[in-house]
Image (tube, rainbow over all chains, first blue to last red; front, side, top):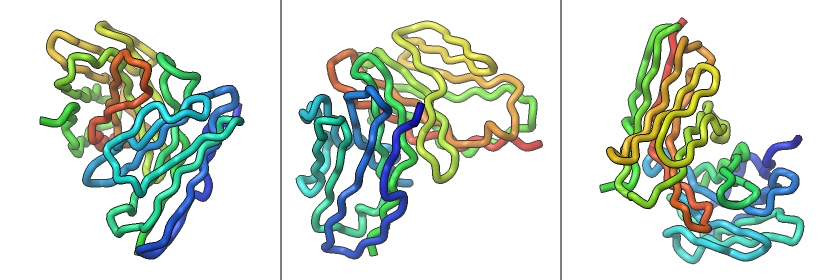
Amino acid sequence: KAGVTQTPRYLIKTRGQQVTLSCSPISGHRSVSWYQQTPGQGLQFLFEYFSETQRNKGNFPGRFSGRQFSNSRSEMNVSTLELGDSALYLCASSWGPPDTQYFGPGTRLTVL
Amino acid sequence: QKEVEQDPGPLSVPEGAIVSLNCTYSNSAFQYFMWYRQYSRKGPELLMYTYSSGNKEDGRFTAQVDKSSKYISLFIRDSQPSDSATYLCAMRDQGGSEKLVFGKGTKLTVNP
């Protein structure tokens, strides 16, 4: 069974640009969550989607947004990139609570 | 006080040693407890998933949850060089959200 896939795996952008990251969950999983991982803050929750609805959102500015499609695939968007947005962005999928989450390999974003 | 505290290490042990990794937490609403392993430049991989208090064993790994002390542990028996990775504890409450709160991770090196 294929795992969670994320594209692209690596991305380099400059300040002020915007970026879109994509996540394909494990087949059958309807819940997708996004996390940001940095050396200083560790893994922090961004948002989660279930059946195309955002159910919860973390403490991030409005520049961070996301959506989920009818096939459960999800995208997240970061507008007006800042240097501090450089991080590993991880997507996780599950069947839904109380099932736990399975992570993809992440997209490493570097903002110059 | 952070919701989840985890000693970042680093922790270095000889091959065959018993490794003990720990996290403490402050939110008494947490009911689900997980341990993830993350190799360098990879996404977190689920190792153990426990609901409420008690012990759970899977091969060389044992997870313990003590809700009265708000303390969780992961024990690795007969540690191998391939166990060298960062170990992350994660937890969430019983609500309908998938949001996981992570410790910062402990970096473990097992020396042959």
